Length: 224
Figure 1 (cartoon, rainbow, N blue to C red):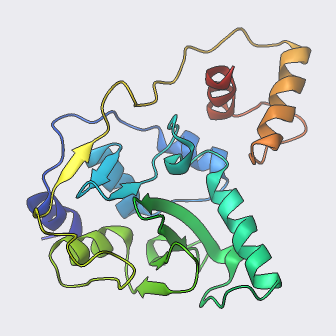
Figure 2: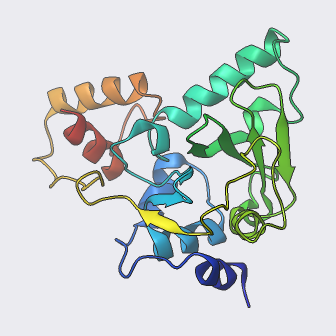
């Protein structure tokens, strides 16, 4: 039984989550993503485990859990600042961390993106809300969730009563889910310039020339 199959037994997913265009997402992020994460999101869609751990997924209208928004880069810059100022000790290089979730207590969940070109080998780390304590799981995001929801692992930064109501998944209500807007007419130099400037201000890595990736255009249209 795979980790995902075990997870779906522990916390059943919703009936029909919205599919994701992973090629477009990876093009936008300019990096490959772990296969287990893509399968996890395809099975569950956006939502939270135990009404506590909220996973980041693409194109969300809630910035804290938007995989393709500015939050991962913003958190990395803050970690780099803390590292440079020796504010907190951390077991991983900030440039290797990519945010993949957040809890109701303000903990952040990260991929440790090494080796960079082998995402299926990325491990998971969680930090305490104030940044002092870290917990690292030697395995994928799905295996971390299985270990957590089965009670076999318990990060000290998480509450002891996390499983008091058992393991369950709560999908994001449709009213809060992000629905990509219909694409607007292309070809406007003014719009292209405005989109590039907006995208860079939001932390996106957008090319100076050529086609602007569709997910960036969709994000711009939704923002405006």
